[in-house]
Image 1 (tube, rainbow, N blue to C red):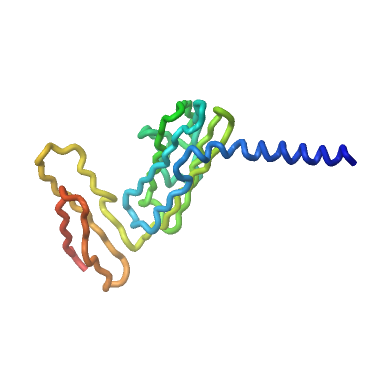
Image 2: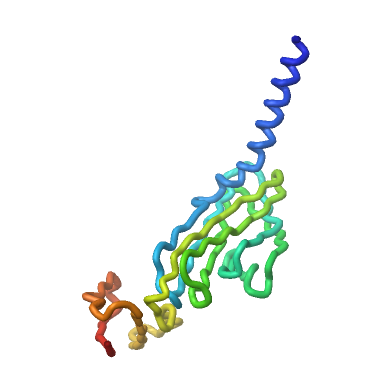
Length: 196
């Protein structure tokens, strides 16, 4: 009877420590999930998952994969997964205190409706772990932005640049934009109804 009890306790302790071994890497990320919410079709949607090595040892990313071709993945602005690259083999060592950014660009032109994607980041140091990062969105097909966002690029001081963004709505005719707000004092934003 004494032998059976000792074996059961030993199995439970061993199982618990191996189950916890993979969770060390979850704590390296500031968040594991990003909610884009309701977004217009064609809009530029980006987010970044920040990984900070808070351990006492170097950690190494050995690879990344994703569940959906609706995302492009970057590691500190270097594209590691896109329409042509389905799985990446990285060998990125992050020292204690260092930070890296895993960027996600969501394709809102080719997909509509509810969209969810998982990005798996694999580690082998200080021990093996896989972290699943999730992005969720609902891409509205009744609102379309063209282009998907406004990029000003490099500008000289005092240079004036005008950019336009078309917002099209394919719903009921009583829908309208009531106002446009802007918190940047360097931008002058105006809107006008082009057609109905």
